[in-house]
Amino acid sequence: MDNSKQLTMGLTLGPLLYFWPKQDVYNFYAQMAETEVETIYLGETVCSKRRQLKTADWISLAQELKSCGKQVVLSGLALLEAESEMKSLRRICSNGEFMVEANDIAAVQMLSEQELPFVTGPSVNIYNLQVLKQLYKSGMRRWVMPVELGADTLQELLQQAEEDGGLPELETEVFAYGCLPLAYAARCFTARYRNVPKDNCEFCCIEYPDGLVMRSQEGKELFTMNGIQTLSAEHYNLEHQLNRMQEIGVNKVRLSPQREGMSEVIERFASRLKGEEPSTISLVNQDHCNGYWFAEPGIRWMETNA
Image 1 (tube, helix red, strand yellow):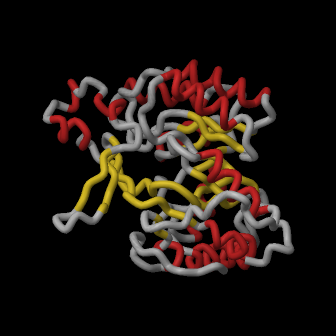
Image 2 (cartoon, rainbow, N blue to C red; image 1 turned 120 degrees about the horizontal axis):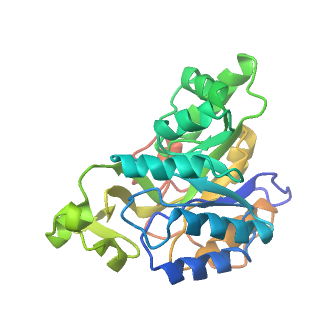
């Protein structure tokens, strides 16, 4: 990476994907308020039964972080299954103060009906120009590229948009660090692991603050089970692809919350965005991957310092 040039992209902190005790959440975001992330996404995106923080608590926390100078976006669920979840989503979409990240098309509809600008999260499938234009017309002003897409696909899509007349108010955000959110299901894998019914799960996710790692018969770490969500076992890491993102036209670089070392991750990415060599030790190790960015199987690590 050319360290002589400061990049203009901003750092964002994605929504917390795991279930942590309420005070742990508050402590975490108190630390994040002191970091160099510009935008923080708040809210429950995985399971509505995770109620240690209610919608009012998330909004209150958003106001606190806003007072600290952070831009805040409220995130909704990625999989809606009950009217109670729709009711909560309506409150988020009608909060009147903060932009909302739509992780389900229901949120897109609610926000579009209110003529509100919104962000689409990585669980909204945007794979071609037609969908990108339709959502932009509906009010989307930032989109997070689906994690399984790569640099060449993103570049082609944004070039097509430019050749078609452009989407002048649209920002592009790329998931650049953390366990990849791969899939959602009606079944709760954590409850299954504990041999309890989903409807009587005893909120057991809280006992696995980093999720449950699933291994192959050969002992290879493959996935992380997180309630109804399947994540990658490895941490996706595009630390050395920031120049390429800038060339493509990426505006925001997303880092996903983790329990340990998050401030160091942010510091490292922030240094590279400034064109500086990070002072912290390398984040690159055997449990990192970046294959999707290179149109390879996501689990792979492609050696590059580009």
